[in-house]
Image (cartoon, rainbow, N blue to C red; front, side, top):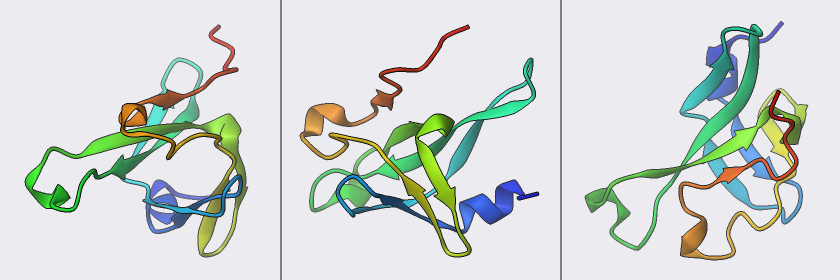
Length: 97
């Protein structure tokens, strides 16, 4: 079993393009179903991003391909295509029960 703290200490790598997305800052949990729905990764925009509000990517659990000792591999397409993607939820095919 893996703890939430273990997940927060791992780097997120997108296997679609090989880019690092950063580290998990939060986890979305469905309390009714008792399962993790998504991981949340901060996205900073611009050169002086520390002056601005931080945005985040919500990566659905189904997009996580492997949790290793040091990294979490995810497969998310078009995550860095434009600034319009900031704060987006990447669940194109998610089943909403």
